[in-house]
Image (cartoon, rainbow, N blue to C red; front, side, top):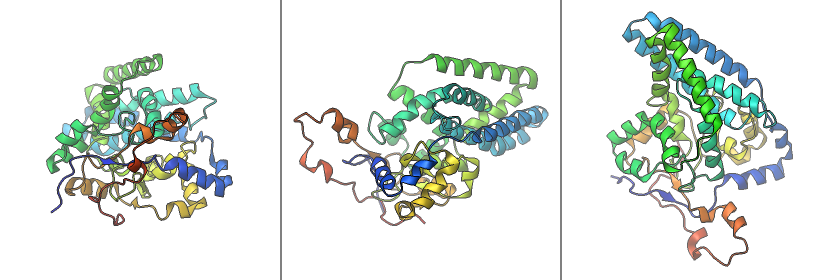
Length: 350
């Protein structure tokens, strides 16, 4: 029987996406035609926000049993959809980088049904996830050692998944705090005003539907499989995984995660074209077909847990190499050859 991991998976080379991006662009320069923005995602936001406000109105006089069911099934699903939509807006992919105000206002609007201010803070920290993928102390997406020690058992992993909206929100602020800026204050004020109006006109159950829907939807919910699927190491040697299942339709194609990290300036609905243009770069990469199975495997597999993440030191990044190109300091001899251990399966994900 395999033993649970007791350390992260250390890798001594830089992240793979920049290299693959250069190789793809060299072979397929037409890929640049996909760069840009797609205003049509604003229509998806508008439809989702309208549905959520309508549902908040509808549940105001329902029984608690009906409220709980609709909060988990409907609000959890739609608010999780909005949360990954905010990820799209964090890259300015609705109206382009030349119209930051329009992107920001849409972000404030899309954030409303979630009940908690998230957009600006997420955007501020998400840049570091791309720039410093898996770099310890720099990537806010990496679980901390405290999380890994507390939640490595089967029961611990169940709790870990349930607490994902809490750890995912608080980890960046606690581990790598940044100064609060005026846009975060604006996000907070707008959200508080909206929440007050919902409570004042529709009552407590309506507000419960929205806020608890966010907590449940980003916690133990089928769509939350993407949190685990994206970067937890299910197969030795691979740190990013795509998912090509039907839930992409309601999650802004967040499943196309290798494609997104390779080309973060391509809007979500064009990401399938990346794989079509350059199939040889993606068809042989392991991928997931079910986020529910991802959650099941993560919880039941002894080898899997919060420790199942690749970590790298800042000194192996290309940024460090550029900043210290004239230094005489050298990395250890084995720094580019030492690989991750053999504790994870080498079979492709079924």
